[in-house]
Image (cartoon, rainbow, N blue to C red; front, side):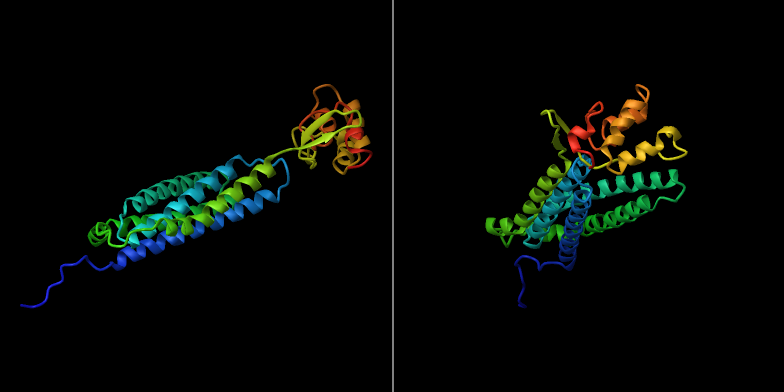
Length: 267
């Protein structure tokens, strides 16, 4: 009688490939989080961080699930987590591809930003789709039921700890970036804002007015007296009145001619 092997099946190459793709997906997502956080942080205080924060938290969560799902599959401890995360990532990347393509069509194929987003979304779509195909194979299903190599808590902590640390760091950095600074004038009044000037209306724009353009340019350049003069000289409700009152967009609150009191003669 020839020897027969009745033990658990050997780990299939398709299972290893699926786990490696999960690792690659996690690495790409974490790299994108770093790029987004650095880019938004470079915008300075008061930047809009709502969407970047949502992306960072979501991407870190999916990256962590990818890593854990890949580990479970390699240990023969199940494939459900990898299937679910792959399906979610495929859906999100597919939606992002459609949105980017629609933006590209509206821009007449001239938006480099939308083109880059589309390329990134398509690339991110390919990884989970291939992973879904691999994890659905019969030999992977059989392997995932063996559970012959238990996953220890310490291993999970070591795997997910850096991801959690990155998620926490990204959240803190984005929260600080999104918080407006507080400025105090010489009589104790407080104003919030980024402190960074916003460009005045440009020639040819809807709100551009040549008679106020020079004063607005000086205000933008940091001459606070020009901001106060602009507020005083413009009609009530005029865009240039608001521009002067907010010290060239440096503040979210209007000073009503008090830019020198807040920033001094120059910014």
